[in-house]
Length: 375
Image (cartoon, rainbow, N blue to C red; front, side, top):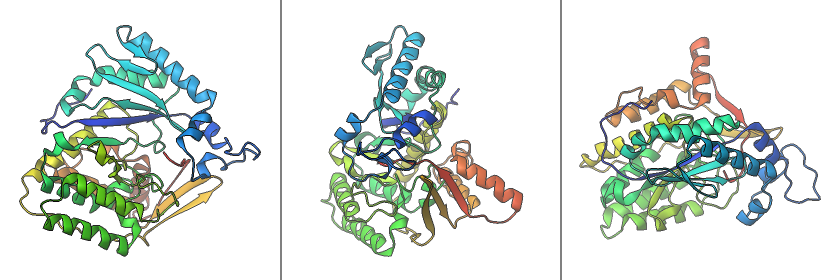
């Protein structure tokens, strides 16, 4: 059960909760784009760069559709008073969520809600989402699909240009959060640090220009950053889509900032902690009178990715202890306890912390797992 903490100012947040199993991942990976090609290990949509949504939809296999239908049936058993529109579920209190199909995961998209509303709905969400999914062999993967959050800019930042700017710079300055802290997926959500000194200077200029010109709106800033991302060469894959970053600014038309660099949430408390930590940080930054300096470390030569037998491996030269300290500092700076988020860091970080404690020396941070394109 979620513990009630002192609530931050209530802003709306939309979630993407993802669930999968080994069969769904295997079926996706062995689906060739060209039907004349054999379904070899590591060959299929995972290696394609120009996969359109139409192609993905046309290749949705029966297993993922069957899994979503089975999940819906479990929800109906648990909530006979819920209303259903296909895979869209309306709970008795008027809240809705929808199950959609992605390449290797089933994704739950939620109606935007406040931290207070999430707390109030924690029991029913835990029961209808996580527990019902588990009964049909669907669980959050440690990485696949991600656990993206969408912060509504209007209700979270309330037109405060400096606050939004400081929140973004504060996160960009802390790449460790997306290198095993909140998440670990250099393919789906790499930190800006990986792009090198030239890119970091360009980002700094965008922020500096925003600081100098008060007529530049938050939306304008998001457009500028998104256009900047579109000029970059992704550090892991040549995908042209600018959304594949730890922070996605592409939704400026919808008025949301997407935080992509977080792992799939393992339970409703995990989701609650994420909302709490980001909104608590916003609350603290409201009181800051000065601009946070852009101090993004250049880690372009500090990480590497490799592919072996269709699996993607990530490594960097930071220790697990350094990653954990960054998570603790972010929570502490937000006015929370230093270990507020420690139970929900990535599995890879937990494993490497144990390894470092055992060996009593820094070890290269390495993780392995199936990682699909466009997740």
